[in-house]
Length: 122
Image 1 (cartoon, rainbow, N blue to C red):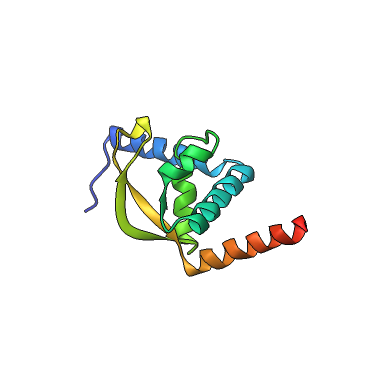
Image 2 (image 1 turned 45 degrees about the vertical axis):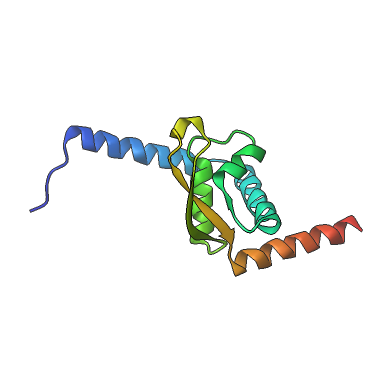
């Protein structure tokens, strides 16, 4: 028999669903900015974390950076290094966050974009 959720559990679930909807509703421009930051850091550094991204990105909606990074992971663009660093975001109170690197797929995409920019700049 399935356990019935308490009122508090149902409210928490509904609140989580609303937060996810807010994150998904962020603009494609925000998504583009996160992708560009990931490609730039991935080409310039062996590894990076959301701490690095927060230092160069404008303020994004609550939870958006993590959701965007997770989408890049699911898309095979980045991969987890199995390392963690303390978060520098005051809201997270220093909890551990993942360290990432570009996957082979991510490196190819980043290099293609870099080459396309060079082609336009000439």
